[in-house]
Structure formats: C-alpha cells, structure tokens
Amino acid sequence: MIDYRGWRHTFKLDPDKTIDDEALEAICESGTDAIIVGGTYGVTYDNTLELMSRLRRYAVPAVLEISSLDAVVPGFDSYLIPLVLNAGDPDWIFAPHVSGLQAFGAYIHWDEIIAEGYIIANPEAGVAQLTQARPIADAAQAKAYAQVATNICRLPIVYMEYSGTYGDPVIVKAAKAGAGEAHLFYGGGIRTPEQAAEMAEIADTVVVGNVIYDDLAAALATVKAVKGTQY
Ligand SMILES: CC(C)=CCC/C(C)=C/CC/C(C)=C/CC/C(C)=C/CC/C(C)=C/CC/C(C)=C/CC/C(C)=C/COP(=O)(O)OP(=O)(O)O
Ligand SMILES: O=P(O)(O)OC[C@@H](O)CO
Ligand SMILES: [Mg+2]
Image (cartoon, rainbow, N blue to C red; front, side):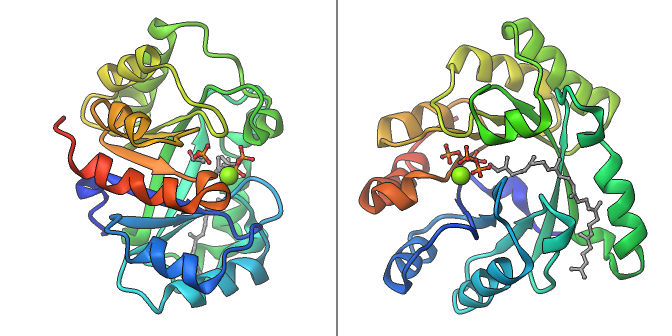
C-alpha cells in the first residue's frame, strides 16, 4: 500500500491537458510527494497511458484517480477511487464502482486501491455539475459529511474539493474536525504560496492542479510553501 499518509503536497495532472517535457520534469523533480493523474472530462485510455509512460521516467510516485471506466490504465503505483458523498445524482456514489468491479474485478490488487470520500464545494466545477453535487450549506454540514466518510463509511481519505476556486478555510477546518482518523486532502484554486501554506496548516495533503498549466513557476512555488508549514 502506498504511504499517502506521508504526503503533504501533490500535483494533479490532467491527461486532457498538454504539458511539455521540460515542465513535466520540473513538476516531477519539484520535491512534491506524489503525482495524481485525473480529471473530470476528456480523460481517455490513450491520453492517460501517454501521461503515465512519461511519468515513469521519474522516481516520484504516480497514482491514477479513476474517473472513467474507459481509462483504467495499468502501471500506476496505486489507484484512487472517488465516491462523491454529496452527489445529487446517486449514480455517482456507487454505480460506476459496481460496473468497475464487474469489468476489472479479476485484475484488482486490493492493496493498490484507495477510496476517497469527495465533498464537492464549488458548484461551478465540472465535477459538481457532472454529479449534480448538493451545495455545502455551512461548516457544520461539511463536518457532518466528513463524519459520514470516516465514521460511517470508514473511508481512509476525505477529499475537500473546491476544484477551480480557492476554498473557505472555515469549511475546510470543519471537514478536518469531522474527518477524525481519515486523511484530509484539500484541492482547489491554489495559485500562491500563501494559499498553499494556509490550506497546508489545515489539511493533511494539499493538491495543486490547474495552476500548473497557467503559471508553472507559481505552481512550483507551492511545494516549498507547503513543506515549510507546521500543522
Ligand atoms: C488493470 C488494472 C489497472 C486494474 C485496476 C483495477 C481497478 C482500479 C479497477 C477500478 C474498479 C472501480 C471500483 C472503478 C470505479 C471507477 C469509477 C468510474 C468511479 C467513478 C468515479 C467518479 C465518482 C467520478 C466522477 C468525477 C470525479 C469525482 C472525478 C475525480 C477527479 C476530479 C474531481 C478532478 C477534477 O476535475 P478537473 O477536470 O480538474 O476539474 P476542473 O474542470 O474544475 O479543473
Ligand atoms: O485544479 P485546482 O483548482 O488546483 O484543484 C485541484 C484538485 O483538487 C482538482 O481535483
Ligand atoms: Mg483540473
């Protein structure tokens, strides 16, 4: 089992976006703890395989966050399996997982599988629209969702997802309080070292995504900011 509990910083690379070799090397050699490969739309077998092959030149762990059954590619160090806890369309809670087990059950190494309880808090994000995510009303509700993840579903990871926008630290703190023994990932809208450090003081692992494609130097600066943080 990969030791995600030691991760403080990760980059999330989207197979549907373009990254040249020089930028990929800078990301992989940045000192980040792991690369997560994933995205909501446009993730295919071919673009995932291509990115995985390029990532294998580097020592940094690479894990695939599965968002489509058409893009389950062997060769990653582990597989993250999202469950969207606040999905308004219940088919996003378990239906693809049942299909996935029927399709891939014989090939699964269970010690490579890590489930994540997603709480989607940016209603504008593609993933919120796809899953028809219910809005998070307030901090108390965020805490309760996190408690559902850890105390009822026994999920090892709670993922506070603000994909595309910077989150509310009050909500993230409440999710951390509810997460208990579960490991808290925070992702969304981090563009500066200050934002990275602020969320790293609350969450166990900070995930940096879209800024990689907009401003590589800003993305790289988040690593040092997170690593210098006490929490
Ligand atoms: C041969 C081999 C390798 C075997 C492996 C076996 C294996 C692991 C099988 C899988 C079994 C299984 C249980 C599969 C389930 C797969 C599945 C399709 C689950 C559904 C996942 C799900 C709920 C997806 C919805 C979207 C989602 C939560 C995506 C997560 C990533 C995410 C939120 C990205 C953010 O998107 P982004 O595009 O960055 O957003 P912006 O547009 O805002 O930037
Ligand atoms: O792309 P950003 O907004 O940095 O979010 C990171 C990650 O949480 C997306 O799933
Ligand atoms: Mg993205």
